[in-house]
Image 1 (cartoon, rainbow, N blue to C red):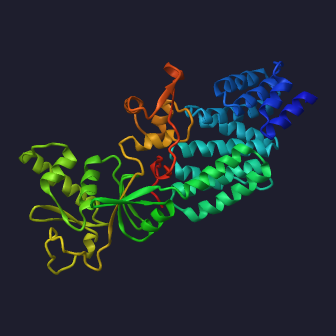
Image 2: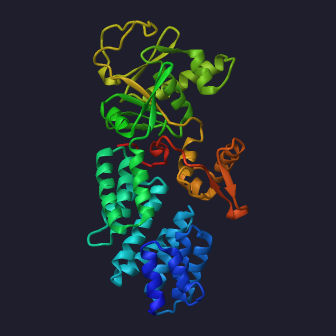
Image 3: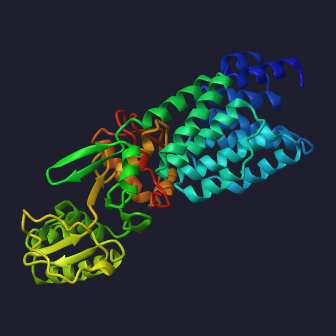
Length: 428
Protein backbone atom coordinates (compact mmCIF):
# COMPACT_ATOMS: atom_id res chain seq x y z
CA UNK A 1 0.00 0.00 0.00
CA UNK A 2 1.54 3.33 -1.06
CA UNK A 3 1.54 6.46 1.07
CA UNK A 4 -1.34 8.18 -0.79
CA UNK A 5 -3.62 5.17 -0.42
CA UNK A 6 -2.76 4.91 3.29
CA UNK A 7 -3.39 8.63 3.85
CA UNK A 8 -6.72 8.47 2.01
CA UNK A 9 -7.79 5.47 4.09
CA UNK A 10 -6.95 7.30 7.33
CA UNK A 11 -8.96 10.31 6.15
CA UNK A 12 -12.01 8.13 5.44
CA UNK A 13 -11.85 6.55 8.91
CA UNK A 14 -12.39 9.98 10.52
CA UNK A 15 -15.04 11.00 7.96
CA UNK A 16 -12.84 13.37 5.89
CA UNK A 17 -14.16 12.38 2.45
CA UNK A 18 -12.84 15.48 0.67
CA UNK A 19 -9.37 14.93 2.11
CA UNK A 20 -9.40 11.35 0.80
CA UNK A 21 -10.54 12.44 -2.67
CA UNK A 22 -7.71 14.97 -2.91
CA UNK A 23 -5.25 12.10 -2.68
CA UNK A 24 -6.84 9.52 -5.02
CA UNK A 25 -9.31 11.35 -7.28
CA UNK A 26 -7.07 11.08 -10.37
CA UNK A 27 -6.12 7.43 -9.94
CA UNK A 28 -7.90 4.44 -11.51
CA UNK A 29 -6.16 1.49 -9.84
CA UNK A 30 -8.52 -0.82 -7.90
CA UNK A 31 -7.45 0.37 -4.44
CA UNK A 32 -7.96 4.01 -5.40
CA UNK A 33 -11.33 3.22 -7.01
CA UNK A 34 -12.48 1.55 -3.80
CA UNK A 35 -11.43 4.52 -1.67
CA UNK A 36 -13.08 6.93 -4.11
CA UNK A 37 -16.27 4.90 -3.88
CA UNK A 38 -16.28 5.04 -0.08
CA UNK A 39 -15.59 8.79 -0.20
CA UNK A 40 -18.46 9.38 -2.63
CA UNK A 41 -20.74 7.36 -0.36
CA UNK A 42 -19.81 9.56 2.59
CA UNK A 43 -20.73 12.58 0.45
CA UNK A 44 -24.14 11.09 -0.38
CA UNK A 45 -23.41 10.24 -4.04
CA UNK A 46 -24.57 6.66 -3.69
CA UNK A 47 -25.09 5.72 -7.33
CA UNK A 48 -21.59 6.89 -8.27
CA UNK A 49 -20.16 5.20 -5.16
CA UNK A 50 -21.68 1.84 -6.06
CA UNK A 51 -20.35 2.07 -9.60
CA UNK A 52 -16.80 2.80 -8.35
CA UNK A 53 -16.92 -0.04 -5.83
CA UNK A 54 -18.05 -2.51 -8.49
CA UNK A 55 -15.23 -1.42 -10.79
CA UNK A 56 -12.77 -1.85 -7.93
CA UNK A 57 -14.02 -5.37 -7.15
CA UNK A 58 -13.64 -6.37 -10.80
CA UNK A 59 -10.15 -4.86 -10.90
CA UNK A 60 -8.69 -6.90 -8.05
CA UNK A 61 -6.94 -10.09 -9.16
CA UNK A 62 -7.84 -13.69 -8.28
CA UNK A 63 -5.40 -13.68 -5.36
CA UNK A 64 -6.86 -10.52 -3.81
CA UNK A 65 -9.96 -12.06 -2.26
CA UNK A 66 -9.60 -9.93 0.88
CA UNK A 67 -9.79 -6.70 -1.11
CA UNK A 68 -12.76 -7.96 -3.13
CA UNK A 69 -14.61 -8.94 0.05
CA UNK A 70 -14.09 -5.46 1.44
CA UNK A 71 -15.57 -3.99 -1.75
CA UNK A 72 -18.59 -6.28 -1.44
CA UNK A 73 -19.19 -5.10 2.14
CA UNK A 74 -18.82 -1.45 1.14
CA UNK A 75 -21.21 -1.90 -1.79
CA UNK A 76 -23.74 -3.60 0.50
CA UNK A 77 -23.65 -0.62 2.84
CA UNK A 78 -24.18 1.76 -0.08
CA UNK A 79 -27.15 -0.33 -1.24
CA UNK A 80 -28.57 -0.16 2.27
CA UNK A 81 -28.20 3.63 2.26
CA UNK A 82 -29.96 3.69 -1.14
CA UNK A 83 -32.71 1.52 0.35
CA UNK A 84 -32.08 -1.03 -2.41
CA UNK A 85 -32.88 -4.30 -0.64
CA UNK A 86 -32.96 -6.58 -3.66
CA UNK A 87 -29.41 -7.93 -3.30
CA UNK A 88 -28.83 -11.47 -2.09
CA UNK A 89 -27.83 -11.67 1.60
CA UNK A 90 -25.74 -14.75 0.75
CA UNK A 91 -23.17 -12.63 -1.12
CA UNK A 92 -22.70 -10.39 1.91
CA UNK A 93 -22.52 -13.40 4.25
CA UNK A 94 -19.83 -15.00 2.08
CA UNK A 95 -17.80 -11.78 2.04
CA UNK A 96 -18.08 -11.47 5.84
CA UNK A 97 -16.94 -15.07 6.26
CA UNK A 98 -13.96 -14.44 3.94
CA UNK A 99 -12.96 -11.38 5.97
CA UNK A 100 -13.27 -13.31 9.23
CA UNK A 101 -11.11 -16.14 7.84
CA UNK A 102 -8.38 -13.61 6.99
CA UNK A 103 -8.45 -12.00 10.47
CA UNK A 104 -10.14 -8.78 9.31
CA UNK A 105 -12.61 -8.80 12.21
CA UNK A 106 -13.56 -5.13 11.92
CA UNK A 107 -14.79 -5.37 8.33
CA UNK A 108 -16.34 -8.79 8.99
CA UNK A 109 -18.40 -7.30 11.81
CA UNK A 110 -19.27 -4.37 9.57
CA UNK A 111 -20.70 -6.79 7.01
CA UNK A 112 -22.72 -8.65 9.61
CA UNK A 113 -24.07 -5.40 11.05
CA UNK A 114 -25.19 -4.40 7.56
CA UNK A 115 -27.06 -7.71 7.32
CA UNK A 116 -28.75 -7.06 10.68
CA UNK A 117 -29.75 -3.53 9.65
CA UNK A 118 -31.23 -4.92 6.43
CA UNK A 119 -33.34 -7.35 8.48
CA UNK A 120 -34.53 -4.42 10.59
CA UNK A 121 -35.62 -2.46 7.52
CA UNK A 122 -37.59 -5.52 6.41
CA UNK A 123 -39.25 -5.76 9.82
CA UNK A 124 -37.76 -9.17 10.67
CA UNK A 125 -37.12 -8.45 14.33
CA UNK A 126 -36.70 -12.07 15.41
CA UNK A 127 -34.03 -12.75 12.79
CA UNK A 128 -32.30 -9.42 13.52
CA UNK A 129 -32.24 -10.19 17.26
CA UNK A 130 -30.72 -13.64 16.68
CA UNK A 131 -28.13 -12.31 14.24
CA UNK A 132 -27.10 -9.50 16.59
CA UNK A 133 -26.78 -11.90 19.54
CA UNK A 134 -24.23 -13.94 17.58
CA UNK A 135 -21.93 -10.94 17.05
CA UNK A 136 -18.91 -10.35 19.27
CA UNK A 137 -18.17 -6.61 19.33
CA UNK A 138 -15.41 -6.84 21.93
CA UNK A 139 -12.14 -5.08 21.14
CA UNK A 140 -13.45 -3.37 18.01
CA UNK A 141 -13.20 0.30 16.95
CA UNK A 142 -15.58 2.72 18.73
CA UNK A 143 -17.40 3.55 15.47
CA UNK A 144 -18.46 -0.08 14.93
CA UNK A 145 -19.38 -0.48 18.59
CA UNK A 146 -21.61 2.59 18.28
CA UNK A 147 -23.34 1.11 15.21
CA UNK A 148 -23.88 -2.20 17.02
CA UNK A 149 -25.41 -0.44 20.02
CA UNK A 150 -27.65 1.64 17.74
CA UNK A 151 -28.93 -1.56 16.14
CA UNK A 152 -29.56 -3.08 19.57
CA UNK A 153 -31.41 0.06 20.63
CA UNK A 154 -33.66 0.01 17.56
CA UNK A 155 -34.54 -3.64 18.10
CA UNK A 156 -35.44 -2.85 21.72
CA UNK A 157 -37.49 0.20 20.74
CA UNK A 158 -39.44 -1.64 18.07
CA UNK A 159 -40.09 -4.43 20.60
CA UNK A 160 -41.35 -1.85 23.15
CA UNK A 161 -38.53 -2.39 25.67
CA UNK A 162 -37.51 1.15 26.53
CA UNK A 163 -35.16 0.39 29.44
CA UNK A 164 -32.78 -1.79 27.36
CA UNK A 165 -33.07 0.77 24.55
CA UNK A 166 -31.96 3.61 26.83
CA UNK A 167 -29.01 1.56 28.07
CA UNK A 168 -27.94 0.70 24.51
CA UNK A 169 -28.24 4.35 23.44
CA UNK A 170 -26.08 5.45 26.38
CA UNK A 171 -23.39 2.98 25.28
CA UNK A 172 -23.77 4.16 21.67
CA UNK A 173 -23.33 7.78 22.79
CA UNK A 174 -20.14 6.92 24.66
CA UNK A 175 -18.71 4.99 21.70
CA UNK A 176 -19.67 7.71 19.19
CA UNK A 177 -17.96 10.35 21.31
CA UNK A 178 -14.79 8.26 21.33
CA UNK A 179 -15.03 7.73 17.57
CA UNK A 180 -15.54 11.49 16.97
CA UNK A 181 -17.65 10.88 13.84
CA UNK A 182 -20.29 13.65 13.50
CA UNK A 183 -22.72 11.45 11.54
CA UNK A 184 -22.74 8.84 14.31
CA UNK A 185 -23.26 11.46 17.01
CA UNK A 186 -26.21 12.90 15.06
CA UNK A 187 -27.77 9.45 14.60
CA UNK A 188 -27.50 8.68 18.33
CA UNK A 189 -29.02 12.08 19.20
CA UNK A 190 -31.93 11.45 16.86
CA UNK A 191 -32.58 8.01 18.34
CA UNK A 192 -32.53 9.40 21.89
CA UNK A 193 -34.94 12.17 20.94
CA UNK A 194 -37.45 9.56 19.76
CA UNK A 195 -37.88 8.44 23.38
CA UNK A 196 -39.37 11.80 24.32
CA UNK A 197 -41.66 12.19 21.30
CA UNK A 198 -45.28 10.99 21.17
CA UNK A 199 -45.42 7.47 19.73
CA UNK A 200 -49.17 6.83 19.70
CA UNK A 201 -52.51 8.25 20.75
CA UNK A 202 -54.95 6.73 23.20
CA UNK A 203 -58.47 7.26 21.91
CA UNK A 204 -61.72 7.12 23.85
CA UNK A 205 -65.03 8.81 23.08
CA UNK A 206 -64.33 12.25 21.59
CA UNK A 207 -60.84 12.84 22.99
CA UNK A 208 -57.37 11.38 22.64
CA UNK A 209 -54.16 11.46 24.67
CA UNK A 210 -50.60 11.40 23.29
CA UNK A 211 -48.36 8.68 24.72
CA UNK A 212 -44.58 8.29 24.68
CA UNK A 213 -42.99 4.89 24.04
CA UNK A 214 -42.46 4.21 27.75
CA UNK A 215 -46.12 5.06 28.43
CA UNK A 216 -47.23 2.69 25.67
CA UNK A 217 -45.01 -0.01 27.19
CA UNK A 218 -46.56 0.55 30.62
CA UNK A 219 -50.06 0.40 29.13
CA UNK A 220 -49.32 -2.91 27.38
CA UNK A 221 -47.83 -4.33 30.59
CA UNK A 222 -50.87 -3.26 32.64
CA UNK A 223 -52.96 -6.16 31.36
CA UNK A 224 -55.51 -3.94 29.62
CA UNK A 225 -57.09 -5.12 26.39
CA UNK A 226 -55.34 -2.99 23.76
CA UNK A 227 -56.85 -2.61 20.30
CA UNK A 228 -53.69 -1.54 18.49
CA UNK A 229 -54.27 0.43 15.29
CA UNK A 230 -50.50 0.92 14.87
CA UNK A 231 -49.79 -2.80 14.42
CA UNK A 232 -53.44 -3.77 13.77
CA UNK A 233 -54.17 -6.40 16.34
CA UNK A 234 -55.50 -7.19 19.81
CA UNK A 235 -53.21 -7.45 22.82
CA UNK A 236 -53.71 -8.34 26.48
CA UNK A 237 -50.66 -9.19 28.51
CA UNK A 238 -48.55 -11.69 26.58
CA UNK A 239 -51.40 -12.71 24.26
CA UNK A 240 -51.46 -11.19 20.77
CA UNK A 241 -54.01 -11.65 18.00
CA UNK A 242 -52.88 -10.09 14.68
CA UNK A 243 -55.58 -8.65 12.43
CA UNK A 244 -53.45 -6.86 9.82
CA UNK A 245 -54.71 -9.19 7.08
CA UNK A 246 -58.33 -9.15 8.32
CA UNK A 247 -59.41 -5.52 7.95
CA UNK A 248 -63.14 -6.14 8.52
CA UNK A 249 -62.52 -7.87 11.84
CA UNK A 250 -60.17 -5.12 12.93
CA UNK A 251 -62.69 -2.40 11.96
CA UNK A 252 -65.34 -4.14 14.07
CA UNK A 253 -62.96 -4.59 17.02
CA UNK A 254 -61.93 -0.94 16.92
CA UNK A 255 -65.53 0.29 16.73
CA UNK A 256 -66.52 -1.87 19.72
CA UNK A 257 -63.43 -0.78 21.70
CA UNK A 258 -64.03 2.92 21.05
CA UNK A 259 -67.56 2.56 22.45
CA UNK A 260 -66.50 0.54 25.52
CA UNK A 261 -68.07 0.05 28.04
CA UNK A 262 -71.16 0.81 25.98
CA UNK A 263 -72.40 -0.97 22.87
CA UNK A 264 -72.53 -0.08 19.17
CA UNK A 265 -75.60 -0.01 16.97
CA UNK A 266 -75.75 -2.68 14.26
CA UNK A 267 -76.19 -0.11 11.50
CA UNK A 268 -73.10 1.76 12.71
CA UNK A 269 -71.06 -1.45 12.70
CA UNK A 270 -72.22 -2.30 9.17
CA UNK A 271 -71.30 1.18 7.94
CA UNK A 272 -67.88 0.95 9.62
CA UNK A 273 -67.01 -2.54 8.41
CA UNK A 274 -68.64 -2.72 4.97
CA UNK A 275 -68.80 1.00 4.09
CA UNK A 276 -72.42 1.01 3.00
CA UNK A 277 -75.02 3.68 3.78
CA UNK A 278 -78.22 1.67 3.33
CA UNK A 279 -77.77 -1.80 4.82
CA UNK A 280 -80.13 -4.60 3.91
CA UNK A 281 -80.71 -8.06 5.32
CA UNK A 282 -77.65 -9.46 3.53
CA UNK A 283 -75.42 -6.97 5.34
CA UNK A 284 -76.94 -7.93 8.66
CA UNK A 285 -76.22 -11.57 7.89
CA UNK A 286 -72.63 -10.71 6.97
CA UNK A 287 -72.28 -8.77 10.22
CA UNK A 288 -73.41 -11.79 12.24
CA UNK A 289 -70.83 -13.97 10.45
CA UNK A 290 -68.00 -11.50 11.02
CA UNK A 291 -68.94 -10.93 14.66
CA UNK A 292 -68.87 -14.70 15.14
CA UNK A 293 -65.37 -14.87 13.68
CA UNK A 294 -64.19 -11.96 15.82
CA UNK A 295 -65.78 -13.54 18.91
CA UNK A 296 -63.88 -16.80 18.32
CA UNK A 297 -60.58 -15.05 17.63
CA UNK A 298 -60.83 -12.76 20.67
CA UNK A 299 -62.08 -15.46 23.06
CA UNK A 300 -58.82 -15.66 25.08
CA UNK A 301 -58.85 -11.88 25.54
CA UNK A 302 -62.45 -10.67 25.74
CA UNK A 303 -66.10 -11.42 25.06
CA UNK A 304 -68.48 -9.92 22.53
CA UNK A 305 -72.10 -9.92 23.64
CA UNK A 306 -75.25 -9.04 21.76
CA UNK A 307 -77.40 -6.23 23.14
CA UNK A 308 -80.83 -4.92 22.28
CA UNK A 309 -79.48 -2.58 19.61
CA UNK A 310 -76.11 -4.06 18.65
CA UNK A 311 -72.99 -5.57 20.19
CA UNK A 312 -70.70 -4.76 23.10
CA UNK A 313 -67.10 -5.64 23.87
CA UNK A 314 -66.42 -6.94 27.39
CA UNK A 315 -62.83 -6.98 28.60
CA UNK A 316 -63.08 -10.41 30.14
CA UNK A 317 -62.20 -13.75 28.47
CA UNK A 318 -64.95 -16.28 27.84
CA UNK A 319 -63.48 -18.60 30.47
CA UNK A 320 -64.24 -15.99 33.13
CA UNK A 321 -67.91 -15.63 32.27
CA UNK A 322 -69.85 -14.54 35.36
CA UNK A 323 -73.04 -16.46 36.14
CA UNK A 324 -74.96 -13.42 37.36
CA UNK A 325 -77.05 -11.20 35.07
CA UNK A 326 -75.41 -8.11 33.62
CA UNK A 327 -76.84 -4.62 33.49
CA UNK A 328 -77.78 -3.39 29.97
CA UNK A 329 -74.60 -2.37 28.15
CA UNK A 330 -76.26 0.67 26.58
CA UNK A 331 -76.82 2.26 30.01
CA UNK A 332 -74.50 5.34 30.07
CA UNK A 333 -74.23 5.17 33.86
CA UNK A 334 -73.02 1.58 33.76
CA UNK A 335 -69.45 0.95 34.91
CA UNK A 336 -67.47 -2.19 34.07
CA UNK A 337 -67.29 -4.86 36.80
CA UNK A 338 -64.27 -4.84 39.06
CA UNK A 339 -62.83 -8.04 37.50
CA UNK A 340 -63.21 -6.74 33.91
CA UNK A 341 -60.04 -5.47 32.26
CA UNK A 342 -59.91 -2.02 30.75
CA UNK A 343 -60.25 -1.65 26.98
CA UNK A 344 -57.90 0.82 25.27
CA UNK A 345 -57.60 1.93 21.64
CA UNK A 346 -54.15 2.96 20.40
CA UNK A 347 -53.97 4.84 17.11
CA UNK A 348 -50.95 6.09 15.14
CA UNK A 349 -49.53 9.57 15.82
CA UNK A 350 -50.28 10.38 12.16
CA UNK A 351 -53.58 9.69 10.44
CA UNK A 352 -54.24 7.89 7.18
CA UNK A 353 -54.00 4.43 5.66
CA UNK A 354 -50.44 5.13 4.46
CA UNK A 355 -49.02 5.71 7.96
CA UNK A 356 -46.52 2.83 7.76
CA UNK A 357 -45.39 3.99 4.32
CA UNK A 358 -44.78 7.51 5.61
CA UNK A 359 -42.95 6.08 8.63
CA UNK A 360 -40.47 4.29 6.38
CA UNK A 361 -39.94 7.41 4.26
CA UNK A 362 -39.52 9.57 7.38
CA UNK A 363 -35.86 8.61 7.74
CA UNK A 364 -35.03 10.98 4.89
CA UNK A 365 -33.51 8.26 2.69
CA UNK A 366 -34.50 7.72 -0.94
CA UNK A 367 -36.50 4.48 -1.20
CA UNK A 368 -37.28 2.43 -4.29
CA UNK A 369 -40.79 1.06 -4.68
CA UNK A 370 -39.41 -2.50 -4.64
CA UNK A 371 -37.72 -1.89 -1.27
CA UNK A 372 -40.90 -0.36 0.16
CA UNK A 373 -42.90 -3.34 -1.07
CA UNK A 374 -40.44 -5.76 0.58
CA UNK A 375 -40.54 -3.87 3.88
CA UNK A 376 -44.33 -3.60 3.95
CA UNK A 377 -44.94 -7.13 2.62
CA UNK A 378 -47.22 -5.63 -0.02
CA UNK A 379 -47.30 -5.79 -3.81
CA UNK A 380 -45.23 -3.24 -5.68
CA UNK A 381 -48.34 -2.04 -7.50
CA UNK A 382 -50.12 -1.35 -4.20
CA UNK A 383 -47.15 0.70 -3.01
CA UNK A 384 -47.04 2.61 -6.31
CA UNK A 385 -50.72 3.56 -6.02
CA UNK A 386 -50.22 4.77 -2.44
CA UNK A 387 -47.19 6.82 -3.46
CA UNK A 388 -49.12 8.49 -6.27
CA UNK A 389 -51.84 9.48 -3.80
CA UNK A 390 -49.29 10.87 -1.35
CA UNK A 391 -47.48 12.73 -4.14
CA UNK A 392 -50.76 14.33 -5.23
CA UNK A 393 -51.28 15.45 -1.64
CA UNK A 394 -47.76 16.90 -1.54
CA UNK A 395 -46.53 14.57 1.21
CA UNK A 396 -43.84 12.75 -0.82
CA UNK A 397 -41.77 13.48 -3.91
CA UNK A 398 -39.86 11.38 -6.41
CA UNK A 399 -36.45 11.74 -8.01
CA UNK A 400 -35.17 9.92 -11.09
CA UNK A 401 -37.21 7.97 -13.60
CA UNK A 402 -38.08 4.38 -14.46
CA UNK A 403 -35.94 1.86 -12.50
CA UNK A 404 -33.82 4.68 -11.04
CA UNK A 405 -36.85 6.38 -9.49
CA UNK A 406 -36.64 6.92 -5.74
CA UNK A 407 -39.13 8.33 -3.25
CA UNK A 408 -38.51 10.85 -0.47
CA UNK A 409 -40.56 12.49 2.25
CA UNK A 410 -39.70 15.31 4.63
CA UNK A 411 -38.72 14.08 8.12
CA UNK A 412 -41.74 13.75 10.40
CA UNK A 413 -40.71 15.88 13.37
CA UNK A 414 -42.45 16.13 16.72
CA UNK A 415 -43.24 12.43 17.16
CA UNK A 416 -41.68 9.03 16.64
CA UNK A 417 -42.80 6.53 14.01
CA UNK A 418 -41.34 3.49 15.83
CA UNK A 419 -44.74 1.82 16.26
CA UNK A 420 -45.62 2.37 12.58
CA UNK A 421 -42.59 0.57 11.20
CA UNK A 422 -43.15 -2.93 9.83
CA UNK A 423 -42.50 -5.85 12.14
CA UNK A 424 -43.08 -9.55 11.67
CA UNK A 425 -43.34 -10.04 15.45
CA UNK A 426 -45.92 -8.63 17.86
CA UNK A 427 -44.81 -6.05 20.37
CA UNK A 428 -43.31 -7.74 23.40
